Image 1: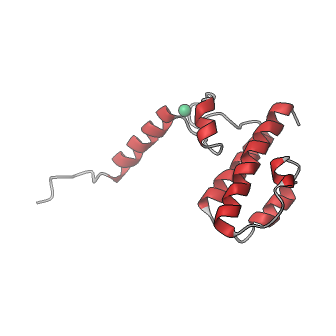
Image 2: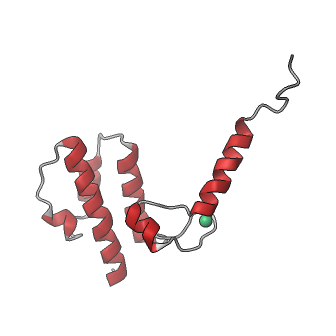
Image 3: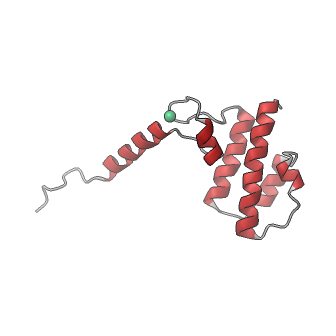
Length: 118
Ligand SMILES: [Zn+2]
């Protein structure tokens, strides 16, 4: 794996670890997570039986590192800003796309004939 990918993997894994520690009294030593040496299979074992949205996001981020799509917006495919990824390493959508998705979402939930039903 490229050095850049390893770095990203480490960042995501240490976030994952902190989250597990905080929310699940996770007691494994941090080393394997923080060094990025933990295998995907081990991660899946650690995460199994936890249906937690945030854990899912972080797991997906790891998969994106693997597939080489990490750090790019899923909407416009442009690279996400470093600041965004530092704020949330599992981020996968840029601000502009997030806004337009929100707008679509809102429109979809606005009744078509709003105001006409009296
Ligand atoms: Zn975008």
